[in-house]
Length: 318
Image (cartoon, rainbow, N blue to C red; front, top):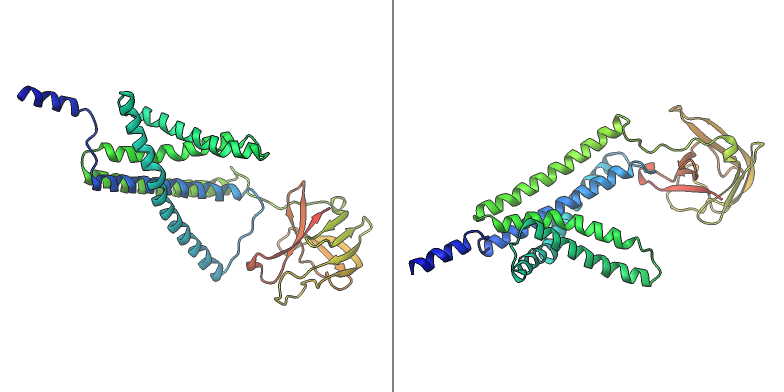
């Protein structure tokens, strides 16, 4: 009897302890905060990368309150998404790793868990890629889904696995808290580091193009089929321009179907930058036009109503 007891202890001492209800709750929370941290980091990276593209921010108390509410909503969505994703994906993958290791007669190591994550990511890529290819989509969806799924699974699965391996529930819940702190800290460091990179010029933030007079000459069109023709001699012809996009009265807001001829020129704005000045038939007056887009595909626009509304009237090069 004593010999059987010793052999049983030796056989079980090297493996992970059976996880109870509280242990699985801690593992579920660990996977949830890991997924939420990944999502938060992805949002930060997306925001920082977006600063290289054309963007505009509203200002004022109302806008700042809106940004704050947006952050609160994002945190709530990330939390709920993490809880659902952990229960629906992460915990099943952890269980699959354990079950497959037992079936193969192998130890359920970290390397084994990575292999299972790779297999799940491959299955997800095939399930997403094959229908896309059959519908005429691009084959690039396969490696994109494979890489995104693998990178999204690995941190959450490894953290959750660690919560199931440790022996005490207190340590398991402490691990969930540690993962949360690390996720928040990593997102904060990435955000501050990105802003510093833009501020020091290491990364180049978006700047509107500065087209020459020769580059402005030609036909421009709005989203409603109206056209504005700029000629090299400084004259301009408008046809069906200015379909109203808002009922808010605004000095300089063009009426519907603005037709006529006039003049255009480039001048210096109060800030010293170059701005576009247009006068056509009394309906497209003033120096409020600005440049947007890129050097290759510039746009002309001005704000409709309060600029904080981010509502623009845009002309694209035809």
